[in-house]
Image 1 (cartoon, rainbow, N blue to C red):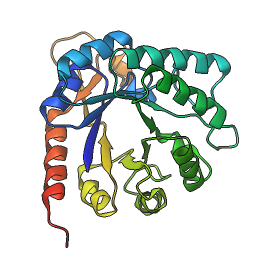
Image 2: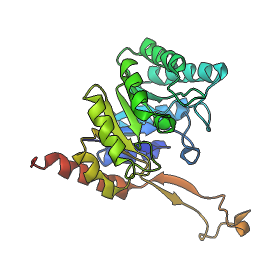
Image 3: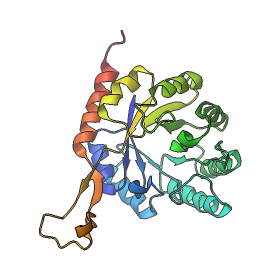
Image 4: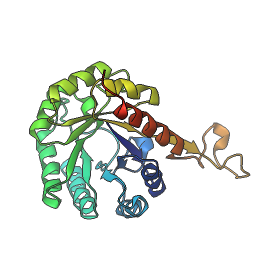
Amino acid sequence: MKLEIAVVSAAGAGTAAAEGADRIELCSSLELGGITPSQGLMEASMEHVDGRLEIHPLIRSRPGDFRYSASDLDTMVHEIRHLLAQGAHGVVVGALTPSGEVDVRAVQRLVGSAKDANPKAQLTFHRAIDQAGDPLAALEQLMELGFTRVLTSGHEATAGAGLQTLTSMVERAGGALEIMAGGGLSLVDIPAMHAAGLSAVHLSAKKTVSTLGEGAISLGAQDGSDPTAYTVTDREVVRAARAKVNALNLAKPK
């Protein structure tokens, strides 16, 4: 089982690398569900990880739904080309039709641009699959489209709640692609994911920091908001996740 961490900063990428993550999903604005990271963030993250793990940037030109216009797709094609040219190991993409099926034409264009930029690029379909009407039917399409893996919570709000569907997805994939559990995943869920045959787990491993209480003057804080707050990668969570995954990987099968 592999460990992937979602990070939004070069420092977070460095933390994930130092604590033994196998991959990172690099993105911006995790509070919006994640959007495409900048080229500057990609470059800085590569410097921080120094080849110790794989970097897979999220390709999502805007927050909101996964029904993309021609202009949205044009933007994402450019993002894919630039980020892979910078050295990304793969990209994380996804698109749906208004009826909740995989948008095959849109996804084929994104996949084609990735393979044109780097024929060895890995392809991850993100949690758009959890908004698809039939995740198992969507999985069949992703196998036909040549995806490396799919990130999913098993069509539920959290991966823990979606364990039954995740198990069915592992069985349906049959090793043709990797099923990676993510979305509301907690450390206590990891053993069950391993037992179900999931090939990887994905955690945001984030915590919120703030300068309030340190003498800062905060405009707007009177209504309960905190404009100084932002999220960072929690080193202790990454370390604990790595330890759990290592213990499971080393355990003798019963």
